[in-house]
Amino acid sequence: MEHKRRKIEREFGVPIGGEILEPQFWTRTAIKDLPKEGPLPLKEIFGREAPLIVDAGCGNGRFLIGQAVWNPGTDYLGADILPVVIRYATRRANQRGLTNLRFLVGDGIGFAQNLLPKGRVSQFHCYHPQPYHDPRRALERMINPRFLSLVHQSLVPGGEFFIQTDSQAYWKYIQGIIGKFFEFQERVGCWPDAPKGRTRREILALRRGFRVFRGKGIRRDALTPEDLSRLETTLPLPNFITEPEVQHLDRAEREE
Ligand SMILES: C[S@@+](CC[C@H](N)C(=O)[O-])C[C@H]1O[C@@H](n2cnc3c(N)ncnc32)[C@H](O)[C@@H]1O
Image (cartoon, rainbow, N blue to C red; front, side):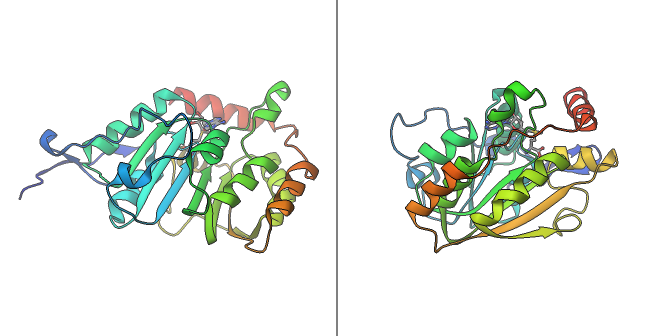
């Protein structure tokens, strides 16, 4: 067999999608040169036009890697502010020989505002956005009215937004604003494709007995640019207080 199979990897005992190929089949999945202006040239990057699914704050890329392996007809793009996690993500994606997945280092707002073409994304995913426990950093929380407006603008009509967190305080905040942008439905229990968790943080949270809050929103296509500007300026900012036990989970995530 051409693509000789070598190795299945696991994280906390849960397999990561795909298998490590022989080095001659490895690809390069890091986008290192970001455009100074304007969105990413997606056709040039992927060498085709296909539905696009993105993950902001993608961490080690576990979710997108599995999706890209199982859905070769779709293109995937992940962004995270931390270079070290993107190095993990790209190494795994490269070793699986993936051509329909790319990762970049960048913050979620800049990603949605500058790098994604408007009206192009089929699904926008956000798993366990950093809760930022220090109240002085509360306004760095990625989920806020401006970000949701940008997600809305990046999506195709009828596009979907997936969000989850293990912080009840963050979830309460999200519940308070998300329905303005999306027809939102909470989900009870894990996503069917990943009964042990879609992402590293979700698997860790479930192993430690944390409740995970999940939901999916469908873009409210009737919203006009004026509606979005008004929502951005009138909805509350994420200056809630987080719960101490989530801080312990953050420490555990760094240590494991
Ligand atoms: C709790 S981890 C979750 C990672 C991954 N989504 C998961 O569920 O395993 C939060 C991630 O968000 C990233 N992050 C924090 N602030 C960010 C921002 N403003 N833009 C993009 N990523 C951010 C962190 O570097 C970290 O990888």
